[in-house]
Length: 122
Image (cartoon, rainbow, N blue to C red; front, side, top):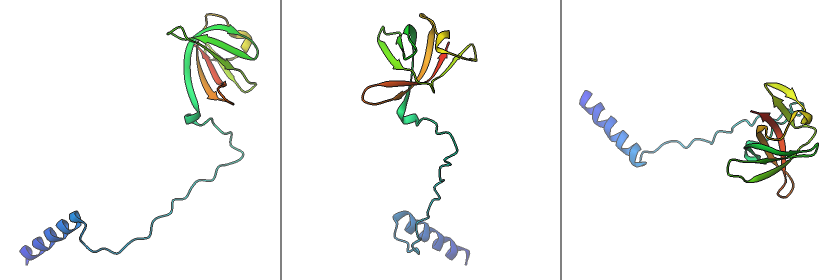
């Protein structure tokens, strides 16, 4: 009897491996998609953001231009929502100085424009 069960088990497993065993089709399972909470602040989509680093070349109330380690200039627009951090504390545009090393989380804007989501002075 044990040998018969072993043979039947082997045949069944071989049939499953080859895809020939008959099985009852199962209905596809529906995944519950979490509905976004409109009260929750929307974080920028990571696919739409990029992190850039460099030394501040020029700074105004509207934009910051940095030079990266390959000597390429990049100008990023500032918005009222741009969060600036210096020495682990909240800072303002006035706290940014030329030659400060910064890491900027950038979001793509209209066309080729880039907008700063956050700036961290390192």
